Image 1 (spheres, chains in turn green, yellow):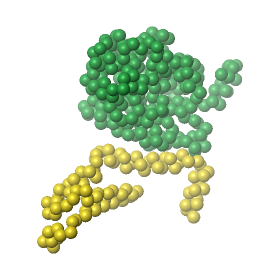
Image 2 (cartoon, chains in turn cyan, purple; image 1 turned 90 degrees about the horizontal axis):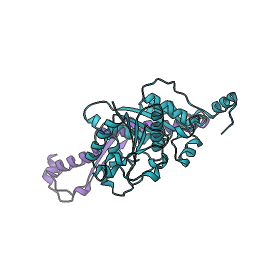
Image 3 (tube, helix red, strand yellow; image 1 turned 90 degrees about the vertical axis):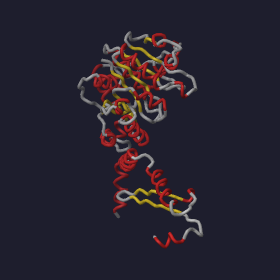
Length: 272
Length: 93
């Protein structure tokens, strides 16, 4: 049965789009049929992170308004057969997406895919509420930093009240994904620790993505970080997170650069 | 002395404990507010309705303020009454 997942955060710039692309690609590489859906109408970027920006013809709004068929708007990934993208439009009209339009598209996608991953826009306005509205599960992305954790808490409150699932009295499954984590700074007490964040937000941990240059490198070339350099630290952390989503039990590790160097020496790999 | 000690500990351990403490206090308040949307607005309207049943007053002159402390919060209601309002009511109360 298809799972609809929303990747959300409240605050902007914490890594929603990067995480959507990385986890979507990791699931697809494990054999799942995945579509990543960009809900950031007017400020789309998932197409760019996925390296499909020049292949966008129709978009989410076109489909919602009946201008294009879903099959015309879906873009198949060039690297993975089972990975698809539904891009957002660049229109500035905030009300271009309607509740009913989104409901119908999600229902349609459910019949075609194993995973429907909705990349939410920042904020708590219409775009963000529509992205989470029909989800079964949520990934709340946060950085180890006060404003991002505060906004994550706000979003958790919305997930528990403004989604179809919550309105039906069901429990929305939520996971926190901590991105841009710097083990050294956390150990020195300069950054909120994993335990601090988990204690405050009180939802289960999906993964810890280390701060890494590999994320920027991957976005520069338009490839999900899990595909661009599968051995890199963030790629391994995202791959583990995707497998946990899929029900696997994988020990949580905090990947550090030191460990990488040690492993590299051991395996005789050249430093990147 | 205890403050100095606290500062000393904070300096030793970095700023993360401060961040955690500030977040915990803030979120405890914000979560409480979520379940009762715009408590102050509702209070203000109802107080206004009750008082204006007896005294003609300017809605702009009713200020309801909440001050949140760590253990106790205070609700401050400030109603400015025009001079020459009905004195019988004031005596009765």
